[in-house]
Length: 122
Image (cartoon, rainbow, N blue to C red):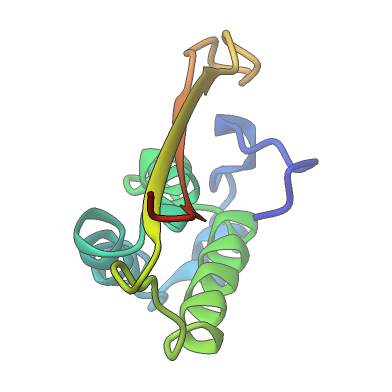
């Protein structure tokens, strides 16, 4: 997701013309299909999916486009994975942060990151 884009309720559908454009768009099903990998094996998309799932009741076209970007990202990175083990010692670093209510609806959003590195076995 583009870090410079803010998603808000104002981007949701508000006119009959906008509703007609989004009719038939499988937004709920698409959120469900990216939610499973986010929870099970793809922590890199958790933040983006959590933001977009807030708009399940009334998604706008901007939300749908962002969700399609996540699906494209998953497709492009499906052959990449993390590997643990080998002849080196695995070091784990973790970080967490919160944006302290940067979204217009004034909810703080937390995120975390785990970094796995290698060190020499002693």
